Length: 266
Picture 1 (cartoon, one colour):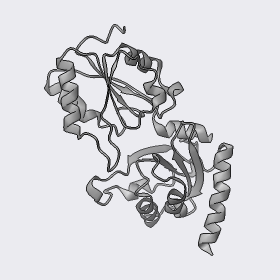
Picture 2 (tube, rainbow, N blue to C red; picture 1 turned 135 degrees about the horizontal axis):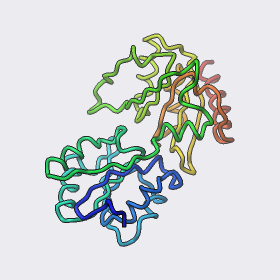
Picture 3 (cartoon, one colour; picture 1 turned 180 degrees about the vertical axis):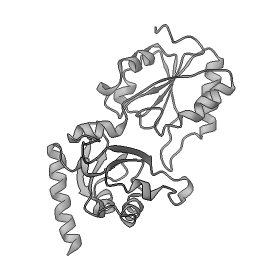
Picture 4 (cartoon, rainbow, N blue to C red; picture 1 turned 135 degrees about the vertical axis):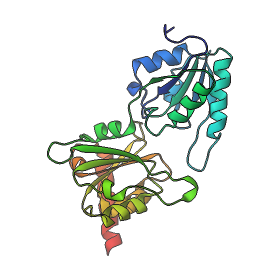
């Protein structure tokens, strides 16, 4: 057991993008030392399979339009488990501190007298860039990387700083952007970003079913509709992702997409 994992302690643990080989060694030790793990919907069987059978697993997953529990209920579960003296892991996809609603859980636990700790994880944008053989930053082209979420509550319009995001000298990594792909492309182009800006669309990042497709900004919505379905999707926009070495599946997908684009244009 980890010395820093006492009864009544809560750890917010990053599971990474899905491949269990990208789970940190510390995260694995915490999972094995826990008595209960509350896990997100996107945590797959390969990672859950690492956890000992003696550990109680509680799904608290939330996906767009399919929430199993609201955030207040999740907060209450974490507090109750800590009060019961459990060794608690809250297992989140990617990194807990990046669009993982960690602050709300930290606040709720602190109000109940508990100080949660955080074990960081590999965020999906890093894993997608690695799979595509590109760098998120690039000297002379991309001196800045912007991480945003395109998830909007109750179908409200995206309230984003489009002028700041439409920076040709940066790389833009967009989480939860599948449903908003059309709005993203239109707004970025309306605020000056070139229609020819390279885009990497990444589905099921790091999993055996990973799918990477290269496209351009003016074809973003079309590409996402054509290849993503309802799979978790990350969108990376910027000159830094214009090259790289992608796998055979992505190259084949690019050819299929190119044919579809020509047909669409005709």
